[in-house]
Structure formats: C-alpha cells, structure tokens
Length: 196
Image 1 (cartoon, rainbow, N blue to C red):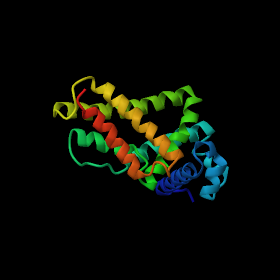
Image 2 (cartoon, rainbow, N blue to C red; image 1 turned 90 degrees about the vertical axis):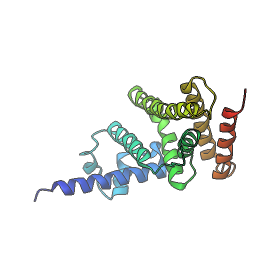
Image 3 (tube, helix red, strand yellow; image 1 turned 30 degrees about the vertical axis):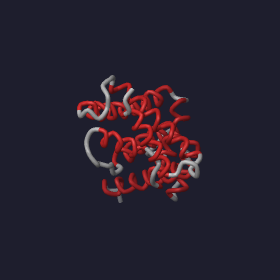
Image 4 (tube, rainbow, N blue to C red; image 1 turned 135 degrees about the vertical axis):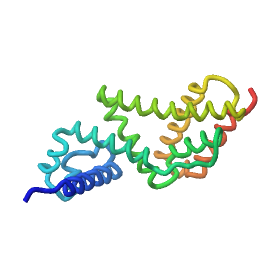
C-alpha cells in the first residue's frame, strides 16, 4: 500500500526532530547519517531518501537551525533602545533552549568555514541579523536614545559584542550565568548612550 502525503510529512517531522536531537547532543561534528538514523530508530538507507549525501544533511540541519531560531518567541518590551536590547537579549543563551540553539550555531561554524557555499550562507545569515539590529539602532537614534552616527556600524559592534558574550557563556557558564550576561549587556548598552 503506498504511503500517503500525510505519512511522508509525519516522517519528515520525525527526521527533523532526530536531526535536532543529534545537533543538540553532539553538534555538527557528530551529525552523520548513522547518528540521525540511530536517533530515529531507522536505517541509514531510509535517510538517504532525504539526504543523499552528508553535505545535504548539513545543509538541511543549517536550514532547520535557522527556522527554529527565527520561530523562537521574541521579547517585545518597547521601541527604540528597548527594542535593540530585546533583540540582543534574544541572541544570548539565557534559557536551556537558547543555550542549545547557540551551541548548535557555534558548532556549525567549523562546517561553514570549511565549505565556501556554506560560508556564504552563514555570512548572509549574520548580515541579515545586522540589518535587523541596524533598523533598531536607527529607531533609537530617531528617538534621541542613541547619539547620531552610522547605525550599521553601531549594529555591527553590538552584534560582535553579543556573539563574543555567547561564546564565553557557552564555554564558561558558571562565570557567565544569565544574570551576568544581562548585566554585561546592559553595561555595554550604557556605553552607547553615554556622552562622548
């Protein structure tokens, strides 16, 4: 009896969840057809219908990571500087889910740096993030909450700061618990608003 479209979609969701579980437990280094098949309780032969190559699996995992990151709930505490702060807080590993997501992102850097096409896609993703931050910086400038200047430059520096904080929090969570991450972010934002 042929499988229905619903069966195929259900299987695709199961595969996606298995890929996510492997990423959360082992990162991109441990992402193989064999580990995903074991997580799924299936054969690697079944997975080759979805991912004929390891690269196809990695591309899918990166897309899945991006989709999950974009669909995560976001803070909305205001406009201007408050919106910029919210966007930066949303990047930090402040919850177990955000920690898993950030660990997976960081583990993906090696795969992306080793492949020019994947590297280009990662650069696009980070540029899109800077664009979103630039809009918030410009809005804070328009409201007089941040001094004038190039909003893209401020956004790039803010992104660099917060990604550096992510790495420190992942490698030394005892020294960078959520409370300290927020304190450091707020201190950084205070430097942006201080008169020069």
